Amino acid sequence: MTLPLAGRTALITGGARGIGRATALKLARSGANVAINYYNSHDEAEALAAEVRALGREATTMQGSVGDPDSVDEMFAAFDAAFPRLDIVVSNAASGVLKPAMEMKLKHWRWCMEINAFALALVAQHAAPRMKDGGRIVALSSLGAYRAIPNYGFVGASKAALEALVRSLAQELGPRGIRVNTVNAGVVDTDALGYFPNRDALLAEYAARTPAGPTLAPEDVANAIYLLCLPEADKINGTTLFVDGGFAVSG
Image 1: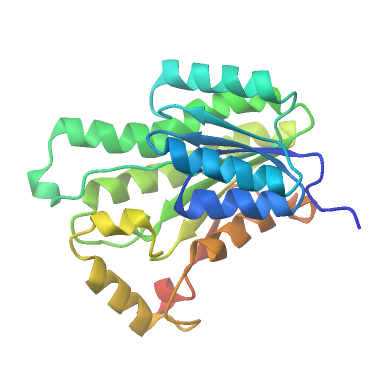
Image 2: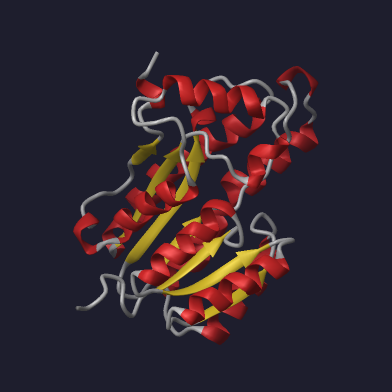
């Protein structure tokens, strides 16, 4: 049986851990070759690439900061040296400052916006010319784009900006056969959640209010990303797919 993504190549930013890692393995198991971008997680990225190769796919790793234009230039040069085509981009890399909005400075605003929103535009500008037969761009957002979460104000604002940008990119790139969508994930217990001072409270609230079950794993989010990459999703463009077990609609 032919795998649904056989012959495709995917680039995943922030791909070494958490949702990025789960996505790399999901796409590889579905037939795709994988380029794994990372910033600090060199060892994790190399270990993941070895797992992908063990599945019979090609894999490469690329260090780079997605909010830095020069770094993204270098990242795509490394991609071109490894792969002749690009079909899927998962814009997963994220960062931010977790403090009350009343304590934030301009440098915090710039950091959140550059890594979480501007990076999508920068990566899309590089990716689109390489998607000669069309493609998929999936951006990762979070519930903070819609809900007020303590200490998450600037990150939430940057995620809301990300989702607005997705809609514009979907309109601009749609005629070229490139579909651009957002996956908005609920409270996923990854390493990143450990930086939240209210981590335990967030997990407890999620468990109490989620109709589909008390936990959300990186693999659950990766499954949704995979669905948007399938040929059957060709007419899904410019939308936000919530993967939160129903948390957002539960009051």
